[in-house]
Length: 155
Picture 1: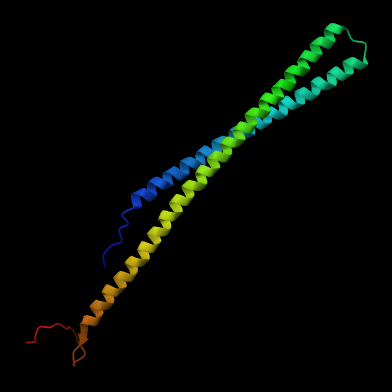
Picture 2 (picture 1 turned 180 degrees about the horizontal axis):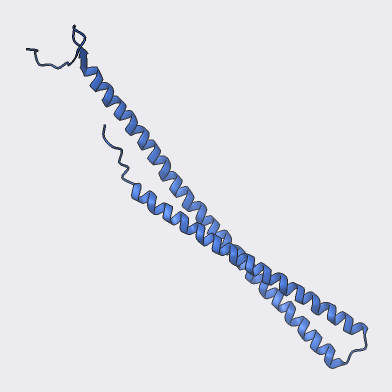
């Protein structure tokens, strides 16, 4: 029986490497997304603190210079929240792109794996047919021993 040799095995190996790279890229992107979400939460808390500080200052007797400084700080924190929100949204899009790339790489590899399985089944079927043909050529002698039947006359 001839050994099964899938000619596209190297392509499968390359696709596997590509799939693993896509998995690593997705993991890195997800970590970056988590980091940016944390920074956004911190900026939102700081913005909330700025709003609370300005409210308290307005209720109390506060000088105009202090109110201006508090308002400036509140505006900067709100701008920071908007910036962080944009960065988080961009990173979320990047995660989605990397996830789509991983899905595509997995589909490519899976298609080749299915092809390999079909070819392996074809090979097994052909091997069984060859083996059966060989066994069919064997015949049984009258004394119970086996002989190979052929078109040549026996001596």
